[in-house]
Image 1: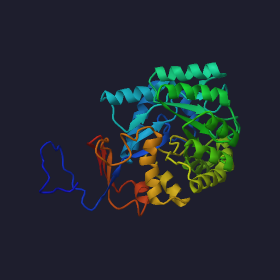
Image 2: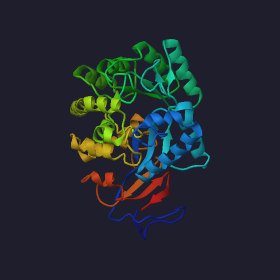
Image 3: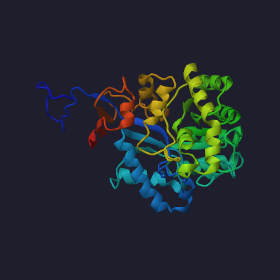
Image 4: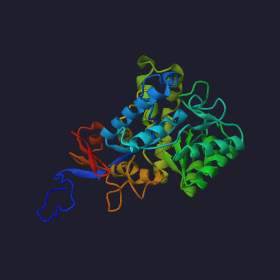
Length: 365
């Protein structure tokens, strides 16, 4: 805030002159992979040990913070690396953005993300896996409802875990007061997991009128991650991205964009998420997702709300984050220029002059 002769300095640690600049809440990315840097072939992560991935995750958390993303939801880490990183942050050992943890995702045997996830078959195994994740301290249960682009040998449109299996996991999360999210790309799998009670659909590539109506009736949010296939298609084989990923991303990209437009026009709750960590989808470049929202029908104001107030609600942190008001954590950005007029200011990053996390200046340009 601008210095003012009427401001009582008693108890004030620091006065920041933000005159002529735009002040907004810290941004929230509802879908990242904190241990992955966005290398062209992310399958190499499986060859790294947990200690290396944890150190790299700390670096990724810092990159997110410097780009103005003060909070991220991590969507899957093997062996609870994200939980360990969060513990190290709370102990003051490392810095970076705030992390909402999920631990390993729940997937069927051989299903999408099986390499770093927890394979479950049947309702009892799904329920036990959710309980064990919660025991480890995760804040979110992630479930794989369909195939996906980045796992070889599975189809993005195919349903995987059954509605009953997913309902068992969702019930355990909700009993513990935790949110749930589902990787869900194909139409039937999306319907299955919406009926199972999921809180947010991640990706939502093949939406139709019926599933959009279901989501609106239940208040199910969409986290689109439009930049994920874009980077794969634009980078292609020349960038070293595996052929199976390029082929699938190319095949689904236009359906993905059309589903986003349809959901937006229908009034589905949309929260910002990038899938950062997938090929060429770099931590710290998250705001490209916001640019895609504006390019495909959102106003800049809607895009900012998607990454602040709405994202806080979807992340179950509306009482702490997402708006500038008394009683909330002071996660703030001070920006040169007005992103309500030009969302590309956030993409460029350099206009973000100051990042404040819980009332402390943690980064300046």
